Image (tube, rainbow, N blue to C red; front, side, top):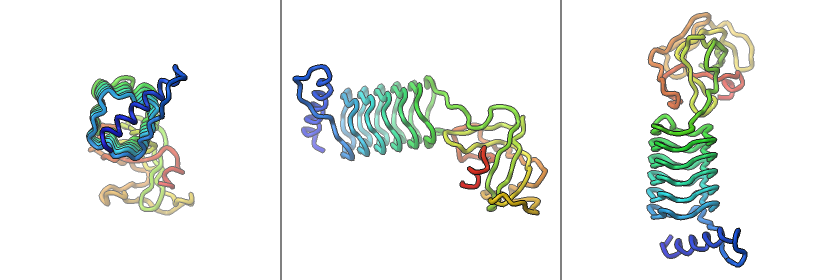
Length: 258
């Protein structure tokens, strides 16, 4: 998109925002759906409530941009500079924020479901009320001094409880021990460093005569009925969802469907 055309769209959008206070102003809501804005300079622009669905903003300068309630679903924001941007209540579902710089950005109540966050700089970001369920690659994001960031674990934080995993086409029922380290990232899958094998059943729930079953990921890691299994190289970064550890779900149904 040519800069002249973009400037006209921004002017009309600003006029459209003013119509809430001045009925004599004529404007038009910005519709930049799937527009190619690669590397564009939008520093300080007011794009609140704009339609930016699927827009290509790779490497764009979006410092101090007002994106309040903007639709940024499926937007490509790879390595974009969003320092100080207002992303309150913005819908970023499915957006690619890998390598983006969000230092000082405001993401209060933003929707970040299924967003790619690998390498994203989230220092000093305000995440109050942000929806991070199933956000991807959060483990490699820089969360230093991130404000209002709290995402409860899917599994109980303390005590023993039951978990389920799929291995070799069977369902392994586990007792996650009280002293086991445990975690979850942004989704339903959990990890721990040790557990006791309670049962090995078929997916339909029928009992088996199996006394042990191999892990899907390592033939050397074996779940033996009645015995405790441990993963000494358990990764303590909870947001490295697929890192080393004993993976499991809280419900049997989730393990069956995995």
